[in-house]
Length: 366
Image 1 (spheres, rainbow, N blue to C red):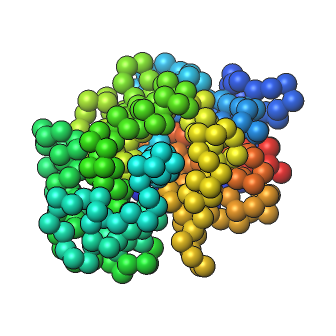
Image 2 (image 1 turned 180 degrees about the vertical axis):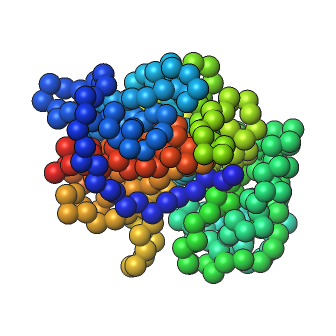
């Protein structure tokens, strides 16, 4: 199991049925979460829409686990999968702003203790963030690695350093400068940040992202305790997975590529940064993170970009999934608006997320 990025094709969800309880302003149009959930077959779905840094609407419907009746709550955390990548890229921007790192930094200077192939030494860190470094997941993050990584007892920085050493000791498997989406890019980027600071990626995320943005409910891996659970399909039936189950998530070493969880309101605080709110990132940092590498490219640093007629400019988009959860985020960067949809529905979660994203788009974006 690995986190995956899907190309986003928002689908229509024109259905009507009595809606569940949700938090919305009196002026906000009703979003039929019950119908979206029924059409998808997922256990639960949730979403948030914000404008000008303020949450205009958020709502959830369904159950925390398919086998139980406990309903989800608007304060529940959700696994964001590969949407974590935009956070890791933003962490790089924070280090640049603090003078600890340069956008032009090369892997040879960031990882001096790794006996890497000479071709990698001049590779810019940002080319990992844009998936254009020539690094491929093939041979690195397959089933054998998943088994080894879940059993690895070394510290997470040690595991990521070992992963980077294995990835960079060989010549490029892909073509540098050509987009090839892969989690290995962000694991190696995480190892570089750990070598730079001497702190784990998790500690850096807490200090540089969660704490300053007020994301008190954010964390790593499947949410524990009284929270939604991810699901897998077993003979056509959804089965929830307790967080301690190895198959409930990818190995923790994959963190920089996709293990963050957060409540919707917390995730909205992060999305608001890219909708032009606050000073956590400078305008130049946001521009760097959301600008593709060159003509013809549609991926920046942790964000895909797509033109949409309802937006003021290019829309930032990303989908995340560890196959147990699903998340979609869209940001109308120039229009100051953003939305996200999440589900714990395993293979059915994408249908729930796409249905809600489409409903939110029609209700709020026009």
